Image 1 (cartoon, helix red, strand yellow):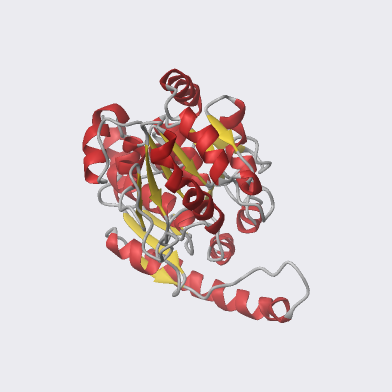
Image 2 (image 1 turned 120 degrees about the vertical axis):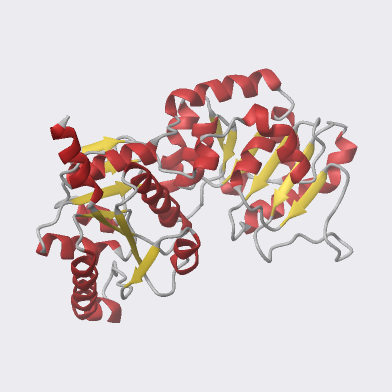
Length: 378
């Protein structure tokens, strides 16, 4: 009993510095990890580190956590002025990171990738502090590939990323999503989104900023939905400022089709949809697996193939479909997606296939790894 009391006392004083920012793909898991750390150790100090221009300047304080910022240090992949400036920028950012680590009395540095993480990893190495990394993508980013060389613990959202001694933990996500019961929440979610509670529902999203190719395909299909006689409804999340207009210039609106720019709380979307059509970002792939939502993935047609790799395990397991961006047309939506959304048996099989691949407690798993790395136990 005495040993247990001493362990709890040691854990209560822990200080965690979490690095990551720039995009929601980095900030969302960072905040989920931060909340899990506070749950495990209510007296612990948690400080997030980002850049002055990233989304974290709004999202981190709104979540109730302290935010410190350092200079953004892009890592050029080719000869350029930025490459020449890199050493000076990196040294300056590392010095800023050292000040944050020292003032926080950090016991461990946690990184989720992005421009801000590399200076924090180097600062932690200088101070001989343990580093814990979480890699969200199936194809690791440069910052985490570098950081993994000095990390005490490397955790990943997808198996077989190639990082050294990786541990598969899944994707830390908001509790509103990880605890979602789709069946129980479906009726109210559809009412909240202005949908008919009883119709088979396809929800299409290109993310918060929208996707032009997806929007074009939906716009082409929307006028034909009522005439198709399928008895389905489509909710189209266009992205902010990306509303879709009809031939008359007015916002496109037909029976069976509704568009909105943005939905606050993706758990409503996941509960309301029988079928989702979306990009294959890491967070989306992991969240639909966790809640068991059948999904048509449309990977970005450019980049390093990261999104295709993110979705491949779900697609191979029969939990999702993949369609190339160039093949996504209005006709494809009408002949494939709208037929699938009515096939309750197939959708149920897809949902069950996702179950072994979905992880709902990745935030708790990460908190345990971080506390262990810091030398304490919750």
